[in-house]
Image (cartoon, rainbow, N blue to C red; front, top):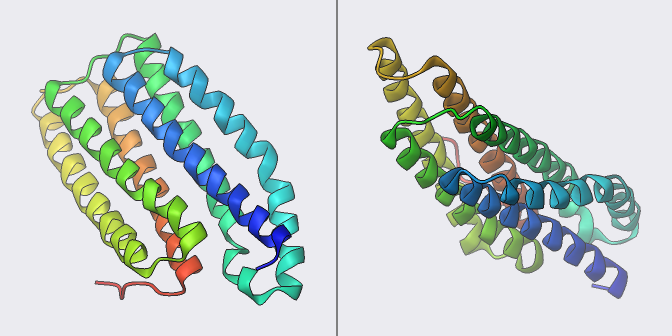
Length: 204
């Protein structure tokens, strides 16, 4: 792979790595009820958003003469969608902090757990961009399915608690939205891994 193509992949890697850093910052903002990590995350997100259009254009152009880059053509779009969803996640956490909305201990534990699982997906996803490691690809895909299962399980149990009057409606709305956004981020990470490696688990 030539220098220009290598630099392109390093840019994608950096963007995926920054998305992971953002989730870590959001996790801290959520756990410690602090707005500062949100601001740090938003700065990273803005840089990713500005970089994606040029990255997409350059990837398409270089892929015309370099077949090795063909699997990467859709990666910038998935990175952009991950970025969009992280913005939504940051907005939900900011709303929770600004309005002093309290989550139950169970909701806090579940949200922290699933954010950590998301980090466990984003880390190898960025590595796959450079290494095309099939083992990591399988791990990302299996982990993504695990996130979907857990998020669905958490949402169902939460709705039952809401019906029983054990949860505040404001907190419930934010919590359910966060679960959906986390599932979307995991899906786009899985798609990046599958496209780059060129292999996907069969649907269950």
